Image 1 (cartoon, rainbow over the protein chains, first blue to last red):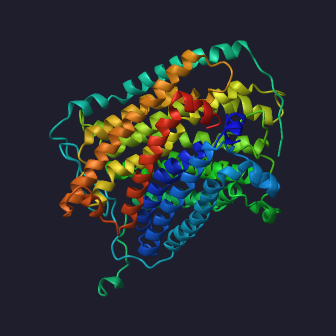
Image 2: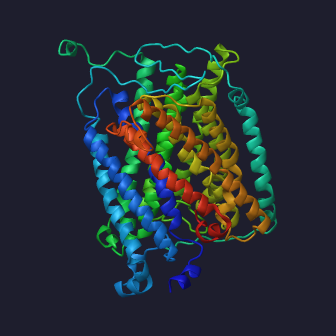
Length: 214
Length: 379
């Protein structure tokens, strides 16, 4: 049965939402949360509300999203459709159609509940940090230094570190400095990819009127 | 310490620096507020898959699963990420170079995107526009939805002129000097987004805005979808590259070490700029009008985008290992556990990298020709 429904729903399955919740939903979102943990004190001059709660929020987010994404990827293998209001089905129908995928779908739900806890913990820290007591000294921006010549410098907190020119100049970095050329190459590649795609569309116009299906 | 608290706690800042911080804080708070609403709704979708329909109880606020999913997608994927990125990628380069950014443009960027957010929220919460985050026609929402989206797209392009201006002012003072790394990475990201944004801009301004306002009766869905994916695939790098800016440009300092290679960071961003753009139509393998030859080319191009992420995995991995060993880590994984895990900012970013190993590997699997056919349409 699972194999049968796989072809039925072939255009749209939960692997992709599973995939982008561990990319943009965790790799990017949690990096931004991490940035907020140093940046809020840096911008407001107030201390972070709670380091422990901040740590708890990111571990819960990591755990919740991992369980959620595992369930999403796995249930896709059973042919569960994505973007579908499956819980709207009567219980007997839901069980008949998605019974095989019961375990992965339960993981999806459990991951979601853990993420609720992570969200609550994060926002207590984030919003609470707008109201904490002032720090004696503002946190500076943690600009990293690199091995070799090129270095980034912080000139924050009133102290100017100065910017010196690079000692050991990398030929690769020098080539890549020509951002205008790189942009032109990209624009040309994009045009080369899209002109042949759009060309037949312009000669076979479809005219559709609007739908409202909700 | 008690002696110093008689003074105002923070050091007095020059006006320009103080106003930069206020604007950056506004970006941060607006972006995370959007995520707060979007993330609060997210688990309702997860419960839906578990067979639990929470939407029964949410009637006056949320009518359907599709309305909740639209709000979740739009707020998290567009509003949250755009505000964080358009804030960080101006603030960090300006502080790195020690120059004031064009505050008028930076505030205009905020204002356009904030006005767009308000229109989008109105259109989504009144259940007139449950078109999901891809807003594929012929699904038709209210004009407020498309106009709001148009403002958000236009606003998100404004950091590019700010960065080009900062970079050229800095370089004018130092002929022949290489752009400092964080500025280089930020500018490359915005150049990528400038080329990518064209698709959504054309789709909204020439197709969906006039159509939703009643100026045109019909719309061409295949053209709209193709324009959408011109932007919609590179947008994933617009989400990812700002995270890379932090991993390359800040995290090595936060863990107490150094970035092992600056040129590799630049190469990663340059490759992302070139490879992100031409691959969007791999989201349309089920659509008519895409020949097998094109599918083959698009598959190859799609897989090539993995290259800069593999460079990142090794460069950042080595930077972490270097620092972990400095901190006394021994053996195969000792350097990893020796990282400063008690720092929540570090823990968040290293855990984010761990999930990205699985996300990136899964992306390569999903990008393969056969699986693309099954999983990739509509994102």
